[in-house]
Image (cartoon, rainbow, N blue to C red; front, side):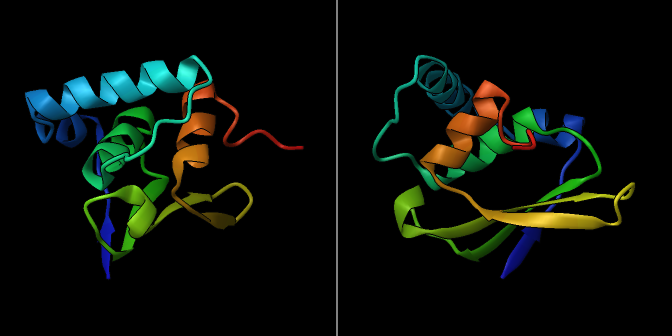
Length: 107
């Protein structure tokens, strides 16, 4: 199991040109209410890292596979104000909600 943390500089510096194109494509698809199939795990993680900058997020990788649907990856968030956090499994729906800005909205 790996736990990945990042900041704004490391997220942008660590991304290749190919990954930045893939992340832009995923972002556009999710903004247009599409649910892309065959999302690569590395592109999903890059999307998360560029969308969530700050000290309150981490990615927990329990099982890494090439495709996100075959991997077991979690987004860990915490909030020192409420002294707690949340761990959500990363899938295409989580990525869509992240891009659309509804991931952390209270219901």
